[in-house]
Amino acid sequence: MDPELFEEWMMIGLVSALVGFMAFIVWDLAKKSKAGRFGTMILFLALGLGVLGFVIKSLVIGSLEGV
Image (cartoon, rainbow, N blue to C red; front, side, top):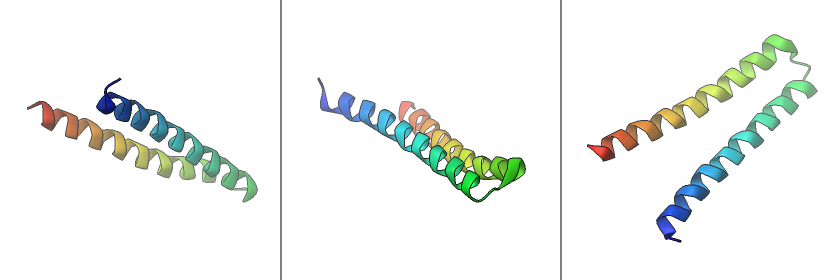
């Protein structure tokens, strides 16, 4: 297996695992702090914006490398 391909797969897999773990942490934080539905939604919205920024950055870099 090519090391570059392995690195790409691991990056996708491990970042996905990290995002999932962060979602669990946010859910646990919301549950323990009794944030309610609105507070939980705000916490997940903040996490979602961070993930969305990472995805958009990856897409922009990929499109620039293709040019």
